[in-house]
Length: 204
Image 1: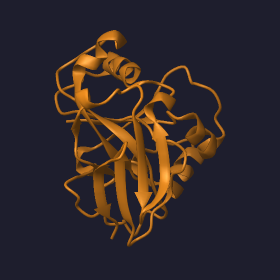
Image 2: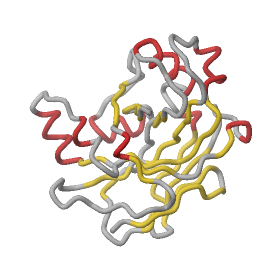
Image 3: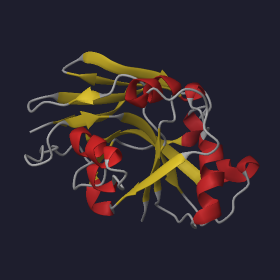
Image 4: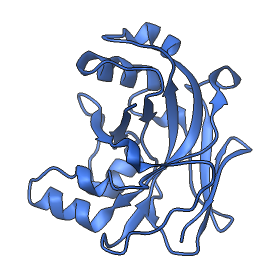
């Protein structure tokens, strides 16, 4: 099982992160190990050696069949469910890697850095127009719609599958909107698709 993630897939987040404007030629792809997964409402324990940890709420897509070099027009056949997930990022570590021109996967792939909500059947939603949000201690900190993605889910799947075969159970984190920021011990995070809560966990 692979966890594949997309960076800077919402214009406002790209601007707040590094001032990038406009749609790039291709999606920015990185990966996380399966040991990054937290699910079933289990706590996220902040690693004390990684510095500032930022939350990034994202729509996560679950792949349901084997696929290679999938045309975008057929990509909708290869996923069956979505949820809200958190891509936790060791931000200071990431920026240090970027400044040094080095790979920054360690700042994204540490244990517990991929929190998953409960999956919902894709047929319940229009993946091109799905609202989602994140609250921390009942205050809304991120809200967006999949219509704002620079690269749609189907475009992302078509691009990724050119390079590596997608397999049943693979997960795709599709990018975070504006509003990401540092998480604090004691925080209570909830993720919503529309008005439906699908993610609920605490930070310890």
